[in-house]
Every structure is written in structure tokens, then in C-alpha cells.
Amino acid sequence: SKDYARSVMFIRGVFAAIKLLQKRFPTEKIKILYAGCGPFATLLLPLLTKFNPDELKIQLLDIHQRSLDSVSRLIDHFDFNAHPIQTLQADACNYQHHDELQLIIAETMQKSLEQEPQFAVTAKLAPQLHAQGIFIPERIEVELCLAQLDCERESIESGHAIDPQALMAAGLRHPVATLLTLTPAMAAKHWQEAHCNPVSHKYELARQRIELPSLKNIRDFDALIFTRIQVFKQYRLEDYSAEISLPYQCHDLLPLAAAAVYDVCYELGSYPRFNFKRV
Image (tube, rainbow, N blue to C red):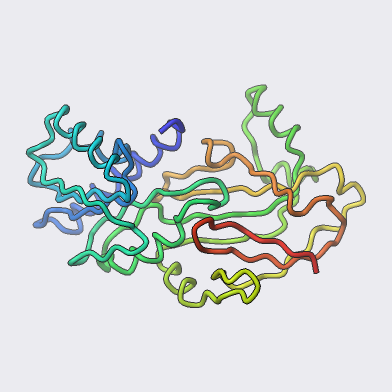
């Protein structure tokens, strides 16, 4: 992964999750499904040096056979063949495991949950988790804010940490709405409640109505979507801490108008995205 900060945080979270699961299931091999493992299985392979072959039972799943071939070469190269690792070509959105899993890793996302099937994968796989199992990431929150992007970038470039609370107190950032909170427990429920849009013929989650703040200088702000990820417990990706948590500019709301009202929904399908419609 080019986004090393994101990879490091996920690897730390996965390691902590496995150690906790070993306490919960002291007599069992921990059954792990890594969905969308890609060509390097980045979030799991580096950890195999920390575990004996009899501690984990691993399934690496990817829709692309080329990725699985690449992973198999890495397993050979690093002499991990003693570990029980199975590779499986399948679409994680449709995959059904033969028994309950103790750890599911599904990291198939871009900023603002756009373009990638993270929601669909979570909705499909989370119900296959053991009641005491762990799903990584634990929580993804997508929030729409009005903020001054150039000022925040300058602050970051000059070495200052971004403090959202301080920015809000200074009137430099205005939260508008949480567009989506994705947790394993709620994903399947949201999926079941999705409805087909009669115009686009695509499935979408329930619409919500949002209102922009009544700011006289609203044109001085940018409409930004922030993606925040709780990988596992204290292992989190907050604003600007990785490429995926950089703000994404929402051009659908331009030109910004004070107190403008929009209906917004998350559209599923081959290219998931948020749709905004001015009311």
C-alpha cells in the first residue's frame, strides 16, 4: 500500500485483535478471513512472524487471481508455508464461509466510501462472524463539514496538528452532518432496508435531509467530506493522519448557499457514492 500510515495503523489493530481473540478462544486456532487481500496481504503477512503455525487458520480472499498468485509467491519467499493459509478467488460481496469466523479483515475502501465496495462487503461478511469475534475495521464515519481547506493544509504543512474542536471554536470549521456511520453490527440492517431508486434503478440507503449553516461568508468555505476510521479499539485514523483521512471536496454542493437544504443518500452498486439533491 502506498498509504503507509494507514497500513501501519491497520497492522497494529489486527495484531491487537488477534491477541485478544487468543484470550477469548484459548484452545482454538483463530480462524481469519482477509477479504480483498490484494497482491501483498499487507495487513496480515507481516504479522505471521509473530505467531506459530498452529495458532492461526487463514483464508485470503480476492476477486483477482493475479493478486492471489502474488500473495502465494510472497508466502513461498518468506517461508510461511507451514502456516495453514488458503487462497480463494471470490467476490467478497457474495462470499459465504462454511462456518463462523473469529476475525474478519475487510479493507476495501477509498475516501468517503466512494468507488469501492466496503459497505457491501461489510454487510455480507459481518453476519458470518462469531458472536465473540472481531471485524476490522470496527467503525467508519463519514462526515460533511464546511471548512477552509487551504488554511488547514497550510497548518499541516507548517507542522501543526489539526484540532477539530479548536477549529470549530474559532468558527473555522462547521460540521454539517454525519452522512454515514458504518459498523459491522448495522451494515446488514442498512443493506436490507435499502430501496431501489425508480429513476437511476440503483439501490440506495435511506435518504436524510441536511441543511448548510447560515453563514454570511459561506463562500469563504469549502464543502469537505472527512472519513474517520476506528480500526480496532484505540487504533484510529483521524483527520489528516493518512491519505484516506484527508478531506475530499464535495463539488455537488457548489456554489455554497447559506441555509441551503439537500437530500443526501448513499448509492450502492458498482460505483458507490453519495448523491446530493437540492430541495
